[in-house]
Amino acid sequence: MRAFYHPDQSIHDPQQYMRYGRVVAPKDLPERTARLLGALARHGIAPERPASHGTGPVLEIHDAGFVRFLETAWARWQDLPAERGPEVWPNTFPYWSGRPEETVRAPCRPTGFIGQLGWYLGDMSVPIGEHCWRSTLLSAETAVTAADAVIAGERAVYSLCRPSGHHARADRASGFCYLNNTAIAAQRLRSKFSKVAILDVDAHHGDGTQQIFYRRDDVLTISVHADPSNYYPFYTGYEDERGNGPGEGFNLNLPLPHGAGGDEMAAAVDRAGEVIKAFGADVVIVALGYDAHRDDPIGVLKLDAADFGTIATKVKSFGLPTLVVQEGGYAIEAIGECLDAFLGGFKA
Ligand SMILES: [Zn+2]
Image (cartoon, rainbow, N blue to C red; front, side, top):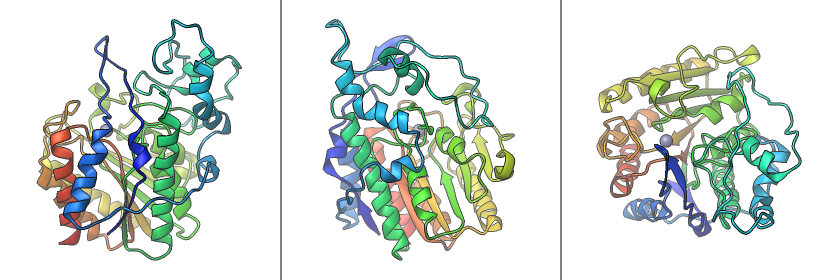
């Protein structure tokens, strides 16, 4: 399996995260990339650097004002009074219903920086530091370059994306995610493949990915995740969200009860496989997170590392060209083993 990654994806080093009313250390540690690279090395895979694509492929998915905001936020933050914090962080959140059929918000009206912060940063887990944009754009370029390899005929490619992407909506960052790498890659794959299926097995609902494709019938979105009624992202990820308009029937959520383990995950992936087959997918993207692992510091599921091997074996049995896009997973001691197991399962 070929893999893609740029070393500067690890220079994004967020310092703040709000949890239970306290500012705590973020979970998306730069060290995550070292652990995942270690797993690749154990399989003899040397990741290649992504090609430079700029923001072109990003703007196929994301709102131009939002992208410009991400690109310039750090410089604009320097203009705030000296008592500003160490990173770009919002202090206002505009009312928005979160209803999934509302796929497009009105354009952001405030021209001022503080108002735009609240509009474009959906929660307090997406601080923007000095290197955030560079890592974020490289992460997207890694996904695009990996998609191009699949387009060129590779059967399976891994894109080591960091920061992750699946919580990023077309015009909003949230949940450690700034640009939606999975969605950007899916759009890229559409240049060759008529029907793209996305299977998201991160423990959190892939709400950004769902929103982006909610009204489309050419990209099937399936997410297996912990029941969101008491778990991030809370407001979406329920079974009755099935798509809207032309996208009706092309979104499937398979929430798992908290405490579920490998058997429940395996059954959900089997169900996803049936739906992907019925859809007639030409290619599949696996949005792969490891926060379903039992040791994850923000997890509620009980998978073991070996269970990610089972997921891979099932995905391989779909018999489709496969692009794996890295999403979350925060148990530093476990994520290397999880990727290791996934690669082993895919090879077997
Ligand atoms: Zn997650």
